[in-house]
Length: 484
Ligand code: CUA
Image (tube, rainbow, N blue to C red; front, side, top):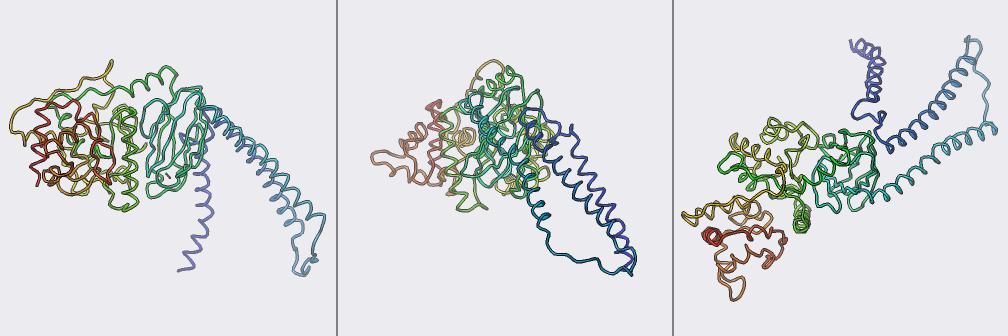
């Protein structure tokens, strides 16, 4: 029985291998999104040319070597048992010299244009910085995208202008990744502690697939992105839009409640803001703190690197290129991120998922809020006013969440990004000589850089306190002092 099975397996094995080979060759179809053959720019084109050269050289070697083997095997085969073994021979200097020189020549033919192009593309990458520089940072498992000198940050979607060589600088915050846009450029390794670069150029507008091409952990295959190539004026409009704030959600709408939930549960890791220099400074501080915490205890880090969600509603996909972005996929993502992206760190580490996740109503509200994240038409959006009155402690508790304090401060002793605020009334009264608790809290809210507690980053946004009315400040202080 056993031999029967193995015989059947043996008979089908070549067929199976042939089918696998066919499937592999099918990936070469030029119009496939991740095929390197249908190139869409000069960089990918010259990389393809090198590939073609190597392919045909290898093909010639294959034909000569295999042809010779087959020819010799047939011509000198033993025809009758009686013939005995052929004459045995050892060494042939002329042949050995020939088959040493021939591969050396073949390798030179491949190496000279390859090395030449590596240097040329690197030079072009340096020069392309004069046009546009995009800094791409690899994270497990998504891509952070920053535009040098433009104060614009986004994630998993690289917008570039058509017909312009662009310098892409590659960094990693954790492990080695590899940046690859099959139709435009790549692959170049993305290495922690080292800035690599590449030049990319798209000849025609379009959306091009990108993919991490270096095994980097559980969700490596799901670490995708898109390059959106646009006409110059569309690209500039996109950059302008990225700097504009979204319209705030209407008062008492589900989106408004979603904003509160987002601020309380998501904002410590996900920024939704455009990138002014002050915010950039705070994000650097936050990043330093985050890395420290992460190195101390990666399994329990309370804040992690997470995609910047500025104008999320204008993006094409979520989950680093996993699925198209729409209300349905956003809802599915918040309900069970692993269903869309196995291995994602949000579900593993975010406090809200560790403590049971969000209910359906909360998810719908957050989705409603996320879908408001798009540039307000025509200029800066107004900031919504807040009604005053009522019990100050209740009002302060509301403000604590709606202003986003709860994103970084627990109300007990747990550290998130800032100190836990349980018992702050006693500590605040003695922290700075000559200041009572009220004065200390007021000044800490108004000027967050003043009294940074040792060991914590100076990362609190100063604008939180700046626009605050005295009523609100007193209410917030009353609430904080009520924390046991
Ligand atoms: Cu990142 Cu593979």
